[in-house]
Amino acid sequence: MTKTFVSHLECSYTGKVYPADQLHGLSEAGKPLLVKYDLDALGKAISKDDLKSRLPEFWRYREFLPLRKSANVVRLGEVMTPILAAPKLQVRYGCGEILIKDEGRLPTGSFKARGIALAVAMAKELGITTMAMPTNGNAGAALAAYCSAADIETYVFCPEDTPRVNIEEIAFQGAKTFLVNGYITDCGRIVGEGKQAMGWFDASTLKEPYRIEGKKTMGLELAEQYGWQLPDVIFFPTGGGVCLIAMWKVFNELKDIGWLKGPLPRMAAVQSTGCGPIVRAFEAGEREVTEPWENVTTQIHGVRVPNPIGGRLVLDVLYESNGFGPAVDDDAVTEARARICAEEGFHMCPEGAACVVALEMERASGRIKADDRVVLFNTASGLKSPMPPLENRLEPGQAVDYSVL
Image (tube, rainbow, N blue to C red):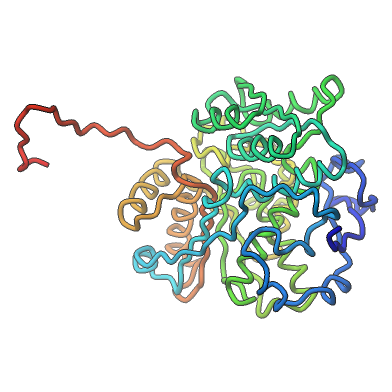
């Protein structure tokens, strides 16, 4: 057994209480459920010093997680991801500090491993034998890998224009993989409508309560790496918005047990001008995403969620943190990604590069000050996204004109 301090689950909309240790999807109100803890007991059971003797991995924060039986842990090498300095970006934008937290070091090359590692462990603990998910790529790859390790059958549905490397990875990791002529919402509809016929558990974003808890670990890591203080601003590429919800949740949990010093950061939900339902709602001063985004044009796949089920929770984070929602242009993201790779030697995914463009915009607008300490999240390895083809060729046996190389 592992020590956990879960007290109950709670509807994020109505506050209705649900028992822990039972299988749950959405609440009766059709809203995401949040895991709640006995924070007084948690705070007395573990100290910051206790962490120092533990392995630098995801499961070092086990008291902050809901898993009860350590036998259900599924490990694929969930390392603590590094925070990297970006000195050339810092000079370019004139910020007090710019750091990049590189989630591409996690299993299957993306931050999705955090939420899925815990979701699959909890599925194993609760007796689930089949899981299904709609995905824009990286979540499906993580689900396929962790479910294969846990002997859980997996069905994954992808929009047909999902990057080929993601589709092939999902299938190669053992999931039954299908392409859908539509968006992730269309894939989600197939999963939801197939529950009764197929008997699978719907692992869609925020339709089960534990991916939030797994993704809390990025906030825990960041706080520990920052010496139990936090940066002034966090930029995160936002599709479903689980990570913003998760980090804000754990920052408040840490504050409640007295581990954090100083103010909480402003949270920035980075979306695209080609799909920005949360940004649009925020700019209109709304508390809900009331209208799905029409005519999705962005090729930044991680933010292509036209109607996020957790939109209200993400907006709550922005309002509570005095945060904001930048929408970036795809062409600017493509240029920034290429430049950072060539100048910094750091290969960002498009979603990570979107955060750089958002920082540039907000530095110019004055929302980011010269002395602000900023963290950008690179949510996946750049190797998982398409790159421009190489056209330079040389022919063997022919003289090389070195003057034009």
